[in-house]
Length: 346
Image 1 (spheres, helix red, strand yellow):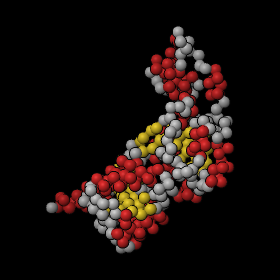
Image 2 (spheres, rainbow, N blue to C red):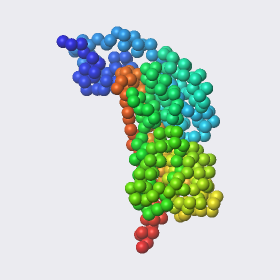
Image 3 (cartoon, helix red, strand yellow):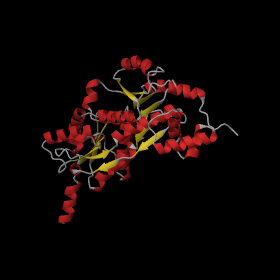
């Protein structure tokens, strides 16, 4: 009879490979029912875990690193990153892992931090927020053979595990929503094109415009940097082009844009409709009531941890690629309620 593998045990027990691995390694985060099923198969088959693998598992630090391309100040002022970190921290607690947070703002930071985070014994694995184009940290970590999950699609995906949303489709649906409401001069505030999600959200906007047979008007496209201040300045740049609606690539950009519109004596949504992306807590405030694309940021963090644990326990090959769902949340800023009332009155 050929030697049984952990995959064989998992299949016979009707559980995932990672669950079977947790039972073998005495991880407490397994349901009692699943534990008994796996133990029963082990007893009936005489399965013996690989000694070297057990030895490696016993030397784990049970610590995960979260590496974010942010300064300390911007980490606390951009609501996206605390929300992501909350999800990561909760999942680490649930699976008995300690979380280490590393903020990497410059190339010098990256050079200093790489030897620490890639050193075997300090961390079992790393969650890395997708970096700018040309950033070598992802490449260096992947080449090291270290378990790494990228939060957001990297520019180079070959052999790399990552988790993301379908940014192209989500942005496309947001702009299609504005088109269905009757808007015709739809502008966009993009992020800088050195990150994949900025590129993908702009592509979703362009796709929706071209599907209508409309010519792309570059005066209706402005660039920000995913911050409220750059959304404000980008909107001031767009105002002379007289857009009747704007799709902003983040809620922070949209909130800055709304401030610029109001300062100009223009109303949202009566004069300019606004749609954002993220569904951060500020988006639902009555003074913004922002229509936006909700991406599951908290769940994103949880899923990143669980996928990383799978990489740690079961090997980094094949790479894992997980795409999570988004949802268009319709609030007052797009003008949908006014347009619906107008149709009813007519």
